[in-house]
Length: 162
Length: 243
View 1 (cartoon, helix red, strand yellow):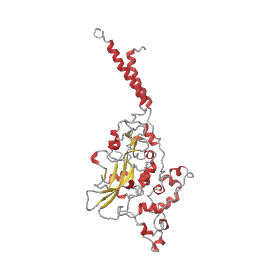
View 2 (cartoon, one colour):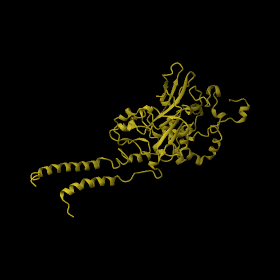
View 3 (cartoon, each protein chain N blue to C red):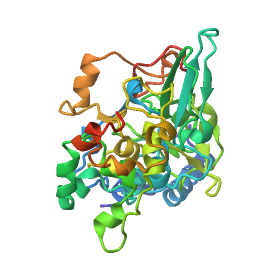
View 4 (cartoon, rainbow over the protein chains, first blue to last red):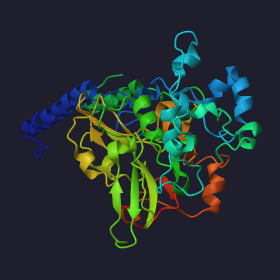
Protein backbone atom coordinates (compact mmCIF):
# COMPACT_ATOMS: atom_id res chain seq x y z
CA UNK A 1 0.00 0.00 0.00
CA UNK A 2 3.05 2.23 0.03
CA UNK A 3 2.23 3.32 -3.49
CA UNK A 4 -1.15 4.66 -2.37
CA UNK A 5 0.15 6.07 0.90
CA UNK A 6 -0.10 9.68 -0.24
CA UNK A 7 -2.75 9.15 -2.93
CA UNK A 8 -5.56 10.76 -0.97
CA UNK A 9 -5.12 14.14 -2.63
CA UNK A 10 -5.30 12.49 -6.07
CA UNK A 11 -8.66 10.92 -5.24
CA UNK A 12 -9.95 14.24 -3.97
CA UNK A 13 -8.86 15.83 -7.25
CA UNK A 14 -10.55 13.05 -9.25
CA UNK A 15 -13.63 13.60 -7.15
CA UNK A 16 -13.72 17.20 -8.35
CA UNK A 17 -13.79 15.99 -11.95
CA UNK A 18 -16.60 13.58 -11.21
CA UNK A 19 -18.51 16.37 -9.49
CA UNK A 20 -18.00 18.69 -12.45
CA UNK A 21 -19.26 15.93 -14.74
CA UNK A 22 -22.37 15.52 -12.62
CA UNK A 23 -23.02 19.26 -12.67
CA UNK A 24 -22.62 19.15 -16.47
CA UNK A 25 -25.18 16.33 -16.72
CA UNK A 26 -27.67 18.17 -14.52
CA UNK A 27 -27.31 21.45 -16.46
CA UNK A 28 -27.51 19.57 -19.76
CA UNK A 29 -30.65 17.84 -18.59
CA UNK A 30 -32.36 21.19 -18.05
CA UNK A 31 -31.09 23.13 -21.08
CA UNK A 32 -31.31 20.49 -23.83
CA UNK A 33 -34.87 19.87 -25.06
CA UNK A 34 -36.22 16.43 -24.20
CA UNK A 35 -36.56 15.19 -27.76
CA UNK A 36 -33.17 16.48 -28.95
CA UNK A 37 -31.32 13.58 -30.57
CA UNK A 38 -34.41 11.44 -30.96
CA UNK A 39 -33.83 11.10 -34.73
CA UNK A 40 -30.60 13.04 -35.18
CA UNK A 41 -28.85 16.22 -34.10
CA UNK A 42 -32.08 18.22 -33.77
CA UNK A 43 -35.23 18.47 -31.68
CA UNK A 44 -37.40 15.52 -32.73
CA UNK A 45 -40.59 17.18 -31.48
CA UNK A 46 -40.13 19.91 -34.11
CA UNK A 47 -41.32 17.43 -36.77
CA UNK A 48 -44.66 17.01 -35.02
CA UNK A 49 -44.98 20.77 -34.45
CA UNK A 50 -44.40 21.57 -38.13
CA UNK A 51 -46.82 18.83 -39.20
CA UNK A 52 -49.54 20.15 -36.86
CA UNK A 53 -50.07 23.43 -38.73
CA UNK A 54 -53.55 23.76 -40.29
CA UNK A 55 -53.86 23.60 -44.08
CA UNK A 56 -55.47 26.40 -46.11
CA UNK A 57 -56.00 24.55 -49.36
CA UNK A 58 -58.59 21.87 -48.67
CA UNK A 59 -57.62 19.61 -51.59
CA UNK A 60 -59.86 18.72 -54.51
CA UNK A 61 -61.26 15.64 -52.79
CA UNK A 62 -62.95 17.83 -50.16
CA UNK A 63 -64.62 19.92 -52.88
CA UNK A 64 -65.84 16.86 -54.73
CA UNK A 65 -67.66 15.48 -51.69
CA UNK A 66 -70.26 18.31 -51.94
CA UNK A 67 -69.93 19.75 -55.43
CA UNK A 68 -70.38 16.56 -57.42
CA UNK A 69 -72.58 18.45 -59.92
CA UNK A 70 -69.70 20.77 -60.87
CA UNK A 71 -67.37 17.81 -61.07
CA UNK A 72 -69.67 16.09 -63.56
CA UNK A 73 -69.50 19.16 -65.81
CA UNK A 74 -65.77 19.60 -65.30
CA UNK A 75 -64.72 16.04 -66.08
CA UNK A 76 -66.23 16.20 -69.56
CA UNK A 77 -64.22 19.29 -70.55
CA UNK A 78 -60.66 20.45 -71.02
CA UNK A 79 -60.38 21.62 -67.41
CA UNK A 80 -60.93 18.10 -66.04
CA UNK A 81 -57.45 18.02 -64.54
CA UNK A 82 -57.45 21.55 -63.14
CA UNK A 83 -58.12 21.36 -59.40
CA UNK A 84 -60.91 23.53 -58.01
CA UNK A 85 -58.58 25.60 -55.83
CA UNK A 86 -56.29 26.39 -58.76
CA UNK A 87 -58.86 29.04 -59.70
CA UNK A 88 -61.01 29.43 -56.58
CA UNK A 89 -58.08 29.83 -54.18
CA UNK A 90 -57.60 28.31 -50.73
CA UNK A 91 -60.94 27.02 -49.41
CA UNK A 92 -60.14 24.94 -46.33
CA UNK A 93 -62.26 27.25 -44.17
CA UNK A 94 -65.20 26.86 -46.55
CA UNK A 95 -64.68 23.09 -46.65
CA UNK A 96 -64.60 22.87 -42.86
CA UNK A 97 -67.70 25.01 -42.31
CA UNK A 98 -69.40 26.03 -45.59
CA UNK A 99 -71.42 28.79 -43.92
CA UNK A 100 -68.37 30.51 -42.43
CA UNK A 101 -66.74 31.49 -45.70
CA UNK A 102 -68.08 31.78 -49.23
CA UNK A 103 -65.64 31.58 -52.13
CA UNK A 104 -65.28 34.96 -53.83
CA UNK A 105 -66.75 35.52 -57.29
CA UNK A 106 -63.93 35.39 -59.80
CA UNK A 107 -63.03 37.90 -62.47
CA UNK A 108 -62.57 35.84 -65.62
CA UNK A 109 -60.78 38.72 -67.38
CA UNK A 110 -57.88 38.31 -64.94
CA UNK A 111 -58.18 34.63 -64.22
CA UNK A 112 -58.43 33.22 -67.75
CA UNK A 113 -55.69 35.52 -69.03
CA UNK A 114 -53.22 34.25 -66.41
CA UNK A 115 -53.04 30.95 -68.23
CA UNK A 116 -54.41 31.64 -71.69
CA UNK A 117 -52.99 35.06 -72.66
CA UNK A 118 -50.83 34.42 -75.71
CA UNK A 119 -47.07 34.59 -75.24
CA UNK A 120 -44.26 33.19 -77.34
CA UNK A 121 -42.76 31.89 -74.07
CA UNK A 122 -45.58 29.42 -73.41
CA UNK A 123 -45.45 25.85 -74.67
CA UNK A 124 -46.68 25.76 -78.28
CA UNK A 125 -49.41 23.19 -77.69
CA UNK A 126 -51.07 25.15 -74.91
CA UNK A 127 -54.29 26.97 -75.97
CA UNK A 128 -53.53 30.71 -76.01
CA UNK A 129 -55.30 33.80 -77.33
CA UNK A 130 -54.54 37.51 -77.42
CA UNK A 131 -57.48 38.62 -75.21
CA UNK A 132 -58.10 41.98 -76.94
CA UNK A 133 -58.27 40.46 -80.45
CA UNK A 134 -60.04 37.30 -79.41
CA UNK A 135 -63.11 38.62 -77.61
CA UNK A 136 -63.17 42.36 -78.35
CA UNK A 137 -63.71 43.15 -74.70
CA UNK A 138 -66.40 40.55 -74.08
CA UNK A 139 -66.07 38.60 -70.84
CA UNK A 140 -64.68 35.11 -71.37
CA UNK A 141 -67.69 33.41 -69.81
CA UNK A 142 -69.98 34.92 -72.49
CA UNK A 143 -68.88 32.04 -74.70
CA UNK A 144 -66.81 29.71 -72.51
CA UNK A 145 -68.12 28.11 -69.35
CA UNK A 146 -65.08 27.98 -67.06
CA UNK A 147 -65.83 24.48 -65.76
CA UNK A 148 -66.04 23.07 -69.28
CA UNK A 149 -64.60 25.71 -71.60
CA UNK A 150 -65.31 24.08 -74.97
CA UNK A 151 -67.73 26.09 -77.13
CA UNK A 152 -71.35 25.09 -77.49
CA UNK A 153 -72.14 24.10 -81.08
CA UNK A 154 -74.33 27.16 -81.97
CA UNK A 155 -71.50 29.65 -81.34
CA UNK A 156 -69.16 27.83 -83.68
CA UNK A 157 -71.88 27.65 -86.34
CA UNK A 158 -72.43 31.39 -86.03
CA UNK A 159 -68.76 31.92 -86.90
CA UNK A 160 -67.57 32.55 -83.34
CA UNK A 161 -63.98 32.42 -82.20
CA UNK A 162 -62.02 29.30 -82.97
CA UNK B 1 -26.65 -3.92 0.19
CA UNK B 2 -23.95 -1.53 1.12
CA UNK B 3 -22.86 0.98 -1.51
CA UNK B 4 -19.53 2.63 -1.03
CA UNK B 5 -18.99 6.25 -1.94
CA UNK B 6 -16.98 5.21 -5.00
CA UNK B 7 -19.72 2.89 -6.26
CA UNK B 8 -22.20 5.67 -5.70
CA UNK B 9 -20.12 8.10 -7.77
CA UNK B 10 -19.99 5.60 -10.64
CA UNK B 11 -23.70 4.82 -10.44
CA UNK B 12 -24.98 8.39 -10.36
CA UNK B 13 -23.95 9.48 -13.89
CA UNK B 14 -25.16 6.17 -15.30
CA UNK B 15 -28.54 6.70 -13.65
CA UNK B 16 -28.70 10.27 -15.00
CA UNK B 17 -28.09 9.05 -18.56
CA UNK B 18 -30.76 6.35 -18.18
CA UNK B 19 -33.27 8.85 -16.77
CA UNK B 20 -32.60 11.15 -19.71
CA UNK B 21 -33.62 8.49 -22.23
CA UNK B 22 -36.74 7.66 -20.20
CA UNK B 23 -37.79 11.32 -20.31
CA UNK B 24 -37.27 11.56 -24.09
CA UNK B 25 -40.19 9.17 -24.44
CA UNK B 26 -41.61 7.73 -27.63
CA UNK B 27 -41.73 9.65 -30.94
CA UNK B 28 -44.76 11.81 -31.69
CA UNK B 29 -46.33 10.86 -35.01
CA UNK B 30 -49.57 11.49 -36.82
CA UNK B 31 -51.95 8.54 -36.33
CA UNK B 32 -51.63 6.88 -39.73
CA UNK B 33 -48.43 8.47 -40.85
CA UNK B 34 -45.19 6.54 -40.44
CA UNK B 35 -42.06 8.62 -40.81
CA UNK B 36 -40.05 5.65 -42.00
CA UNK B 37 -42.44 4.71 -44.81
CA UNK B 38 -41.93 7.83 -46.92
CA UNK B 39 -39.13 9.57 -48.77
CA UNK B 40 -40.44 12.73 -50.34
CA UNK B 41 -39.37 14.42 -53.54
CA UNK B 42 -40.86 16.51 -56.31
CA UNK B 43 -41.22 16.07 -60.05
CA UNK B 44 -41.19 19.23 -62.17
CA UNK B 45 -42.26 18.80 -65.77
CA UNK B 46 -40.80 21.82 -67.57
CA UNK B 47 -42.63 21.39 -70.93
CA UNK B 48 -45.93 21.61 -69.02
CA UNK B 49 -45.18 24.84 -67.17
CA UNK B 50 -47.02 27.86 -68.61
CA UNK B 51 -45.65 30.42 -66.14
CA UNK B 52 -49.03 31.38 -64.67
CA UNK B 53 -47.62 31.84 -61.16
CA UNK B 54 -50.38 29.83 -59.49
CA UNK B 55 -47.81 27.83 -57.49
CA UNK B 56 -46.17 31.01 -56.16
CA UNK B 57 -49.49 32.49 -55.06
CA UNK B 58 -50.65 29.20 -53.55
CA UNK B 59 -47.41 28.81 -51.60
CA UNK B 60 -47.64 32.34 -50.22
CA UNK B 61 -51.29 31.83 -49.20
CA UNK B 62 -50.71 28.42 -47.66
CA UNK B 63 -47.56 29.26 -45.75
CA UNK B 64 -47.95 32.99 -44.94
CA UNK B 65 -44.79 33.75 -46.86
CA UNK B 66 -43.94 37.45 -46.31
CA UNK B 67 -44.25 39.82 -49.27
CA UNK B 68 -41.09 39.91 -51.35
CA UNK B 69 -39.84 36.51 -50.17
CA UNK B 70 -40.37 33.21 -51.90
CA UNK B 71 -40.40 29.55 -50.94
CA UNK B 72 -41.03 28.76 -54.56
CA UNK B 73 -40.73 30.97 -57.63
CA UNK B 74 -40.78 30.64 -61.41
CA UNK B 75 -38.01 31.79 -63.72
CA UNK B 76 -38.39 32.40 -67.43
CA UNK B 77 -35.40 31.57 -69.58
CA UNK B 78 -34.83 33.01 -72.99
CA UNK B 79 -32.02 31.42 -74.92
CA UNK B 80 -31.63 33.68 -77.94
CA UNK B 81 -30.28 32.62 -81.32
CA UNK B 82 -27.46 35.16 -81.15
CA UNK B 83 -26.20 34.49 -77.65
CA UNK B 84 -26.93 30.88 -76.86
CA UNK B 85 -24.51 30.58 -73.96
CA UNK B 86 -25.94 33.50 -72.00
CA UNK B 87 -29.63 32.92 -71.39
CA UNK B 88 -31.70 35.86 -70.28
CA UNK B 89 -33.48 34.97 -67.07
CA UNK B 90 -36.35 36.94 -65.58
CA UNK B 91 -38.58 36.32 -62.59
CA UNK B 92 -40.60 39.48 -61.94
CA UNK B 93 -42.01 39.20 -58.41
CA UNK B 94 -41.07 35.54 -58.43
CA UNK B 95 -43.45 35.07 -61.36
CA UNK B 96 -46.31 35.53 -58.90
CA UNK B 97 -48.41 37.58 -61.32
CA UNK B 98 -47.19 35.86 -64.46
CA UNK B 99 -44.71 37.18 -67.00
CA UNK B 100 -44.68 39.97 -69.59
CA UNK B 101 -45.86 38.79 -73.00
CA UNK B 102 -42.99 37.52 -75.13
CA UNK B 103 -43.52 38.68 -78.71
CA UNK B 104 -40.19 37.83 -80.16
CA UNK B 105 -40.03 34.28 -81.36
CA UNK B 106 -36.25 34.15 -81.75
CA UNK B 107 -34.54 31.43 -79.80
CA UNK B 108 -36.32 29.41 -77.19
CA UNK B 109 -38.29 30.26 -74.11
CA UNK B 110 -39.18 28.05 -71.19
CA UNK B 111 -40.25 28.36 -67.57
CA UNK B 112 -38.39 26.79 -64.68
CA UNK B 113 -40.24 26.53 -61.36
CA UNK B 114 -37.76 26.56 -58.50
CA UNK B 115 -38.09 25.52 -54.89
CA UNK B 116 -36.17 23.74 -52.14
CA UNK B 117 -34.72 20.56 -53.60
CA UNK B 118 -35.02 18.72 -50.27
CA UNK B 119 -31.51 17.39 -50.74
CA UNK B 120 -30.60 14.09 -49.14
CA UNK B 121 -27.09 15.45 -48.43
CA UNK B 122 -28.09 19.05 -47.96
CA UNK B 123 -25.36 21.65 -47.49
CA UNK B 124 -27.74 23.86 -45.49
CA UNK B 125 -28.33 21.36 -42.69
CA UNK B 126 -24.62 20.59 -42.42
CA UNK B 127 -23.64 24.16 -41.61
CA UNK B 128 -26.24 24.80 -38.91
CA UNK B 129 -24.30 25.37 -35.68
CA UNK B 130 -27.20 24.55 -33.34
CA UNK B 131 -29.10 21.71 -35.00
CA UNK B 132 -32.07 23.92 -35.89
CA UNK B 133 -32.34 22.68 -39.46
CA UNK B 134 -32.37 19.06 -40.35
CA UNK B 135 -33.55 16.47 -42.82
CA UNK B 136 -36.48 14.57 -41.37
CA UNK B 137 -36.57 10.74 -41.49
CA UNK B 138 -39.02 11.04 -44.41
CA UNK B 139 -36.66 13.20 -46.46
CA UNK B 140 -37.91 16.77 -45.93
CA UNK B 141 -35.51 19.57 -45.02
CA UNK B 142 -37.15 21.48 -42.18
CA UNK B 143 -36.31 24.37 -39.84
CA UNK B 144 -37.06 24.24 -36.13
CA UNK B 145 -37.88 27.92 -35.79
CA UNK B 146 -37.94 27.80 -31.99
CA UNK B 147 -34.32 26.68 -32.07
CA UNK B 148 -32.93 28.79 -34.94
CA UNK B 149 -30.62 31.67 -34.03
CA UNK B 150 -30.99 33.45 -37.37
CA UNK B 151 -27.26 33.33 -38.13
CA UNK B 152 -28.07 32.79 -41.84
CA UNK B 153 -25.22 30.31 -42.44
CA UNK B 154 -27.78 28.05 -44.11
CA UNK B 155 -29.00 30.89 -46.33
CA UNK B 156 -25.46 31.23 -47.65
CA UNK B 157 -24.89 27.49 -47.90
CA UNK B 158 -27.91 26.65 -50.05
CA UNK B 159 -26.64 26.45 -53.64
CA UNK B 160 -30.18 26.95 -54.95
CA UNK B 161 -31.01 30.16 -53.06
CA UNK B 162 -34.04 28.59 -51.44
CA UNK B 163 -33.74 30.05 -47.94
CA UNK B 164 -34.28 33.48 -46.46
CA UNK B 165 -34.40 35.10 -43.06
CA UNK B 166 -38.00 35.82 -42.14
CA UNK B 167 -38.24 39.62 -41.78
CA UNK B 168 -40.45 39.48 -38.67
CA UNK B 169 -39.43 36.23 -36.98
CA UNK B 170 -35.71 36.81 -37.74
CA UNK B 171 -35.15 33.09 -38.22
CA UNK B 172 -34.45 30.96 -41.27
CA UNK B 173 -37.51 30.12 -43.34
CA UNK B 174 -37.93 27.87 -46.35
CA UNK B 175 -40.15 25.43 -48.21
CA UNK B 176 -41.40 22.68 -45.89
CA UNK B 177 -42.75 20.69 -48.86
CA UNK B 178 -46.07 21.52 -47.14
CA UNK B 179 -45.12 19.08 -44.42
CA UNK B 180 -48.38 19.85 -42.60
CA UNK B 181 -50.25 18.71 -45.72
CA UNK B 182 -48.27 15.71 -46.97
CA UNK B 183 -48.37 14.08 -43.52
CA UNK B 184 -52.18 14.26 -43.70
CA UNK B 185 -52.41 12.66 -47.14
CA UNK B 186 -52.81 15.93 -49.08
CA UNK B 187 -50.49 17.12 -51.79
CA UNK B 188 -48.52 20.36 -51.51
CA UNK B 189 -50.26 23.71 -52.08
CA UNK B 190 -48.20 24.37 -55.24
CA UNK B 191 -49.12 20.97 -56.73
CA UNK B 192 -52.76 21.47 -55.76
CA UNK B 193 -52.86 24.86 -57.52
CA UNK B 194 -50.87 23.93 -60.64
CA UNK B 195 -53.38 23.86 -63.51
CA UNK B 196 -51.25 21.80 -65.90
CA UNK B 197 -49.76 19.20 -63.57
CA UNK B 198 -46.26 20.57 -64.11
CA UNK B 199 -45.48 19.91 -60.45
CA UNK B 200 -46.07 16.55 -58.84
CA UNK B 201 -45.31 15.47 -55.31
CA UNK B 202 -43.39 12.18 -55.36
CA UNK B 203 -43.10 9.62 -52.60
CA UNK B 204 -39.91 7.87 -53.62
CA UNK B 205 -40.39 5.06 -51.10
CA UNK B 206 -43.87 4.16 -52.25
CA UNK B 207 -43.77 2.15 -55.49
CA UNK B 208 -47.54 2.58 -55.87
CA UNK B 209 -47.11 6.33 -56.29
CA UNK B 210 -47.95 7.04 -59.98
CA UNK B 211 -44.90 9.29 -60.23
CA UNK B 212 -42.70 6.18 -60.09
CA UNK B 213 -44.01 5.17 -63.51
CA UNK B 214 -42.98 8.55 -64.90
CA UNK B 215 -39.56 8.45 -63.25
CA UNK B 216 -38.96 4.95 -64.61
CA UNK B 217 -39.85 5.83 -68.19
CA UNK B 218 -38.40 9.34 -68.56
CA UNK B 219 -34.99 10.92 -68.25
CA UNK B 220 -34.98 13.31 -65.34
CA UNK B 221 -32.29 15.65 -64.09
CA UNK B 222 -31.59 17.59 -60.91
CA UNK B 223 -30.24 21.12 -60.60
CA UNK B 224 -26.48 21.50 -60.05
CA UNK B 225 -25.74 17.76 -59.97
CA UNK B 226 -22.02 18.58 -59.75
CA UNK B 227 -22.60 19.76 -56.18
CA UNK B 228 -23.65 16.25 -55.09
CA UNK B 229 -26.40 17.56 -52.86
CA UNK B 230 -28.64 14.56 -53.43
CA UNK B 231 -31.36 16.91 -54.70
CA UNK B 232 -34.83 15.36 -54.84
CA UNK B 233 -36.54 17.91 -57.07
CA UNK B 234 -36.43 16.03 -60.36
CA UNK B 235 -36.76 18.06 -63.54
CA UNK B 236 -38.06 16.59 -66.75
CA UNK B 237 -37.07 18.44 -69.93
CA UNK B 238 -34.43 20.54 -68.17
CA UNK B 239 -32.32 22.65 -70.52
CA UNK B 240 -28.56 22.70 -70.08
CA UNK B 241 -28.60 26.48 -69.76
CA UNK B 242 -30.51 26.37 -66.45
CA UNK B 243 -28.33 27.42 -63.55
